Structure formats: C-alpha cells, structure tokens
Length: 223
Image 1: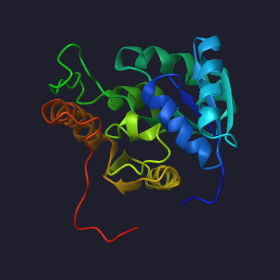
Image 2: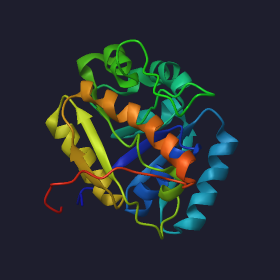
Image 3: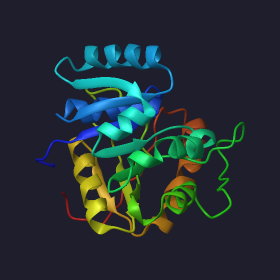
Image 4: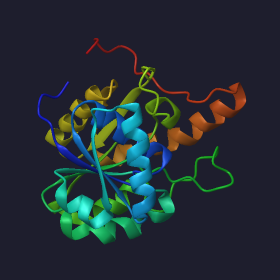
C-alpha cells in the first residue's frame, strides 16, 4: 500500500465506476474530489459515499476546479464524453498523472469489442495532452458493483499501462490502497488489450449471470 496520501480528482465521479473508485480511495485515506458538470448531483453522491465510509474525506467541484486542486486525476467518464472532458481540464493537468479508465463501449452492442480509430481510447488522450501529462490507463476491468461494496474484496487484478514507469508504480500503489493488485502491463499502447477485455467481461457477465467478472494474472508472486 502507498504511504503517501494524495488529493485526487475523479472526473465523472458521480457515475457507477467513478463513485466506486472515489469511495475506495477516500476510504483508504486520500482526499477525493468528485468532479462533475452537475453540482447538485455531485453533492448528493458525496453524501451517499460518506454514509458508506463516515471518515472519508470527500468533496465535490466542477471538473476544472477538481482537476486544478488535485495532484492526481482520474478520468471515469463515458467514452462519448472523454475528449470534451479532457479539453475542459487540459490546462490543469500539466505535470500531473492522469489515470484514464475509459472504455470505448458502443451501445447497444457493448459485449462486442469495438476499439476506436487509433487503437485505443487512451491513445487519443495522450496525443491530445502531449508529454506534459503522464497518462496511465487502468481500472477498465474492475466491476463498479464490487468497488462500491467495501465489505467485498474484488477478486481481480488491475492492468496498469503507461509510458512512464514511475507513474505506473504510483497507480499500482493506489490500486493496493483500494484492495486490488495492480500489475505493470507495459506501455500505454498495451491499454488496447485492457479496453477490449471490458467487452469480453460484459459478455461473460451476461452469459453466466454474474455482476462482475474480473481477470487474474497467474504466475506472479503474491504482493
């Protein structure tokens, strides 16, 4: 687990995945700001999450303000809103780590892999932001259902992809804080595999009627 506590913005923090990530990080002792375009909804979600973890340090703010105040920023918005959200906060991201959990799902066929032009959703983010921002892709394959249940230890690993090894290690530490094992999965281009796996896991969930199938990497020593 990481010993340093961070101020972390979760953009899209009112959604299922974003609020689950926010809850786990805040429960671990980080100060978490839920970024949203809907201030009232963000305040309601903060109140709900505090009921699950009364000691959690949580706040709500518009996306740009949340990103400006944070040391690390999570992007958990739907793929359709990814580019617009990144542009909205771009000026606040220089020198920071951006953790992109975006999955390029194309409704209604969300159980079919449909990667965007360029190979992955995160590739477009890194291209837009340039080298001033260390972009890491992670958490695409973790069930929101399990993240929001603090009594449940998610039975899955987190593939962490990024071109900066130090930034990857920071995100692996955050995953450990959340009760998950992060795994170095190589450069950012490899995130295409994690993004594609989400549709595979959705198909498995549908076929076997389970709420949150995950992945485990075998052959590694316990961490």
